[in-house]
Length: 78
Image 1 (cartoon, rainbow, N blue to C red):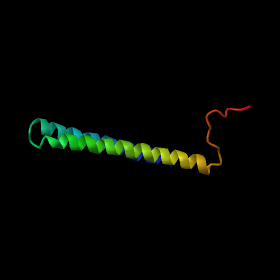
Image 2: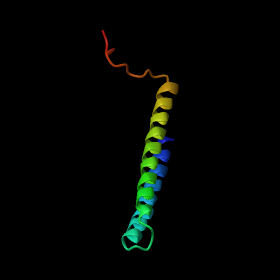
Image 3: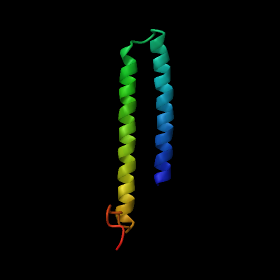
Image 4: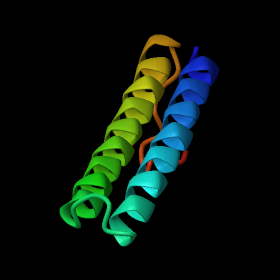
């Protein structure tokens, strides 16, 4: 499951980078407005943060429902 989600997110990022690169080039040549670059970068930041949250939630769910205990700092044995 995690492998499929990772592949979908990777494909989405590649497509986003291609679209944003085209928009940036069009902005450089003044075919589109200059503020489109900042909006595109903001969108990319939102996508990165969203992907990080999704991976974190999936990892937490795997640990929680697999029966494994999460490692606790300072409780390495003894």
